[in-house]
Image (cartoon, rainbow, N blue to C red; front, side, top):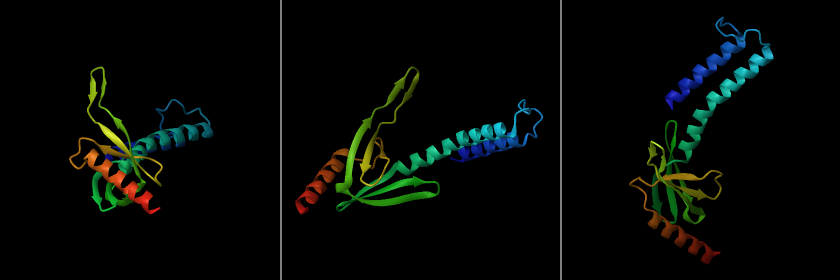
Length: 153
């Protein structure tokens, strides 16, 4: 994350320098101010995309998962510390599995699964290699909570 913020700062300074046109080594000194502003804006947006994507992924990456009665306590990453949420088990649905990826010489062994919760736009990501996760226990708990919710309503 720190590397992303440093990169964002460097790209931001490069874009700002392009707008001001102070660098004699930049070959585009003949561009109008509007064109330089457009290019600088594009550089800054591209540079900001990576930290924003990492923040979004961290906000949906489940660090700890613990059942507490009819609720599920989820801890996700934030830039400074963890964010803990309690959600009813009946509002959850386990999503699809993501298998390890093998592409040519590269091999990424990061199996995962999504967890959709009512009221959240993006699904949460569960690392299947984590020691805190037992899929069958969670599936049984969600099914039991849904049965209780249907029986009560």
